[in-house]
Image (cartoon, rainbow over all chains, first blue to last red; front, side, top):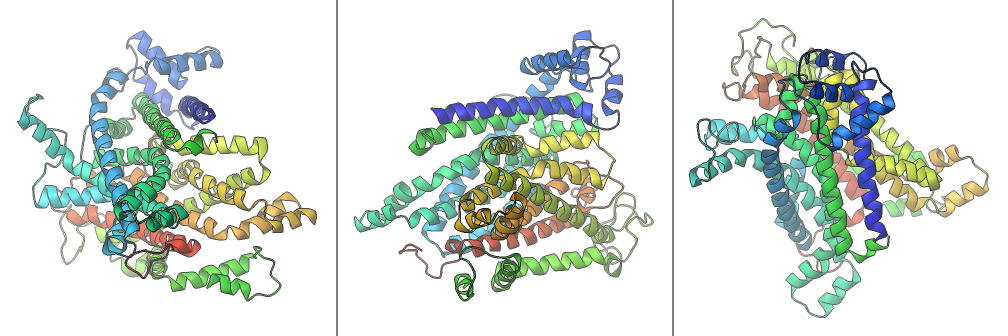
Length: 323
Length: 310
């Protein structure tokens, strides 16, 4: 229980820290970027303008502490003002969210499951072809920039072979509907971005899982299981992998921040209109309100996953509960 | 082998090593490990290109004097850019700034990680609590989104700004690793004897603790460099670098913006990407090798099946 409360505390403190960082950046940065951006918002709806003034500290004549409190209130209630195109920030984010959620969610699960299983087998057959060829290869791929893998896949499967579309989330002119045709259209658009993310993250799971397995395989309880004459797959899965997977679970949440960062680059590479692509258009349009809100969204996503992973660890590993 | 080397040194207190010994041991280990040798060779090659780009590049990288956006030909083996610069020359000249950013950020983040991690572990108590919390926060806050927000405000301020934001966001992972390593040796006998001798804290941290963590510090630098290569290039790829300066990342940005892949000018996009990957790989290979050197359990096994525990 203490463990859970401690992690919940970290969740709240980090959320507060991220909101405060977002509040401080426009005020501490040199130059008058924020003033220039806010100058474009003359004559828009006063409530939205006020939200922006509170966030960026421009054109306000009031106590900074009061501004800070107002800012916190706005963040918690989702009032982030307008984007450069004068659309409410939340509306734009909600349009992009499902695409990113689908892309990152599915790829993370695939990469985690595949990586963990491959890492398990890799350690079990140490020195075998999987362990000495495929795993190191995939691990080297994780150090490659994600957009480079994306560009290669885009060129090979998109441009040269023309198997998959080059950009966007579904074909222009198709009507979003629940037909087989449209679902297939979405899948074929998402395949290359998803493949990019899987290829660049699976190696990390393999690597940590393998190394954890190597350690657990030399534990006495594994020798005991062998002595009892248990079938190999039971020793591998129930005795060794089960104990090796715990650190991977903790790493899962940490990895997510990395994956989300990668998804921004992937979405830009494939012009996939999720939150990452919004982030990019935000930079080209100097859309500070959109960027600030997206930063908080990404942080919140990572935080929630960290918390879930912590709870899962507490459930699976009794040792952490009274740590 | 390392254990032998240590045993054969009479008079050395168990566990205590100086910087020199550790350095020699690491040097020997690099030469014995194939991954490390390849990584080092790649890195030296890239460093050579960064030092003497003029020897290799055929043209001035900024000279926009050729036909615009043409594919690879004998005159321009990687083609030309949207304003008619030679892509190959840009690739060669872009090496220097890319390498400088990587090494400087790697070094600074490692120093910050050592200072924060080791200090937290050694002092303990409130200081440890505060520093660990700070580390945790920076670990969780997603790096690239934060970098993008910061860079937007610093747009056009160039290399120093990029280095600064990468350092600000990149130290936390190392600090956590170094902290746990320092925690595990803080109660060793040789530190106790230093305390009894009346040595001051900075002396103990720098002269007694640090040499014993040298391999982890080096591994940390390598890991940070791997991360920096990709992250810096990613930022520049998104158009957040100084577009007036030539780096592999900014080259990628212009290639992407001008549809290099679709228009048959493939190498304009793929060559800088491959260069970034190569630099990352050279650091990663060294890092991978270091893992094996410092953790003997991970060394490649000879047998096909690990029947007996390693």
